[in-house]
Image 1 (spheres, one colour):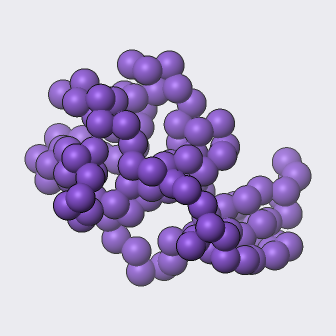
Image 2 (tube, rainbow, N blue to C red):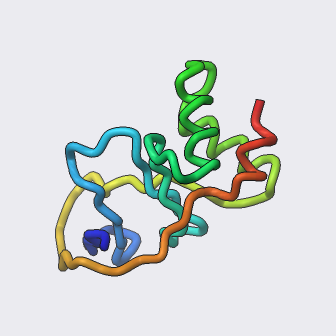
Length: 111
């Protein structure tokens, strides 16, 4: 279950998946502005998350640079969610989303 907050913005309604203020090492990745993947760098059950954790620990890359490299190599439109600058909340609700880790073969091509 994830908390999804809908905000009013200049561009219309924006849905943002909120992991909370105290979440460390976790990100929601959007594909064409739709939440699609959940990265948890401390998840030992996912090879993709383990690879991301090792890349981040090497301090050679950031999560943003990983997403950018995937976009370039795979032709995707992935992004990390950002809250709007002006937060006019329409509603906030708990939603059951099926967010998976990033595909492992995408991470293996990053050097």
